[in-house]
Image (tube, rainbow, N blue to C red; front, side, top):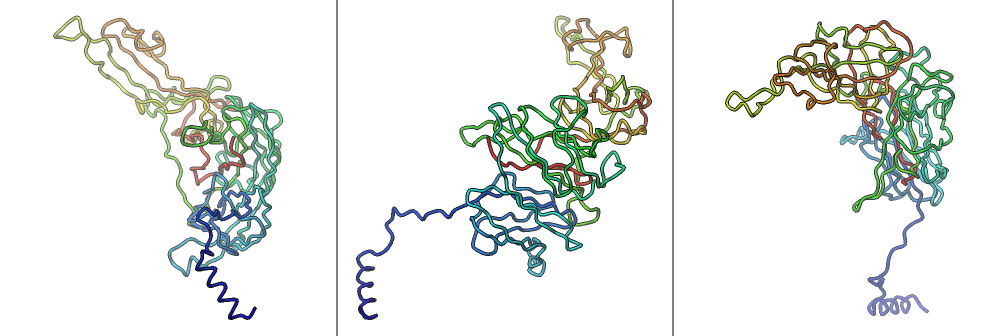
Length: 429
């Protein structure tokens, strides 16, 4: 067939409907799954993306410690990935921090994490293939990746800020003891998965071979069951969840990385309450944030059969609840005695209700609830307290200006002044 005749025939075929049928579905390319995280502590936002082909895989405008918690698809095969500075200024956005290639197997799962220091030209990718474990019907799995070259900024101060950490998974209020579930995770090293029963857990990091002081503590993300609008969210309460805990350093002071942290909350600074501000009984510490005294069951002057609203007659400290609950993690600082400071797991809120009116102070009758006060014009004092356990026997009561910061269960890490832990999901339940 001559070229002229060939094109002529093709024109006829096109005229008769050479186009794809409307029901045709473009086949999906073979894919792998990937999560991303920016662990470069000395620069601003970055972009991570595939550059050897058009791809939806990438993570953009990423601050230090930002992580793509749940996996996204990436085209299988050898992919070239670059990490750029993120900016609307082309002169900045063309700055390449990292250029690397990696072979992604079809249906494989991977983590792509950028660590090191941008200012020294030492940004480096850690690409982790994920070989999923199989937790039992009442279990979940977690492993630890250490991307902290130093634990500078730890509270309390460590003797060796570059020591490899052990990780204790603690269910309940116990202090770290015995052998850790995950041991001696070197910088840029990753542990095997630990498979444990579901529940609310704290992860406590300490230098290898030690249990105190903690480098950092964090409550594992709890997860949530599937709903009519979304699937199950992985967490320590959901069987079948598989997580990676990434140890990340503090932000370099003065750099473009975020420098924020949770607000501090005060303990009771009232001079008369100094002995109650923070005190110890054996290994248990009680901290008081404030107190409030009210007169309750006041008769209505216009109708003796009725009662008027309670009247507040005194407050100390914040005069309000500490805002913590059993299982929370707090960071205590400001005590003159170092044993009171550092990362702590809250045993429980421990508010104390004291009934009067003829009695005063802690010698008064303890009430289970305000409703227990049946005497008219009764005086009721509530002391707002919480408890945690420590190692050591510091002088009691403690001294200093004691404050605490609260860290709720989350995938992200909110304190950029200290080392922290962020979490990514390797597999949903």
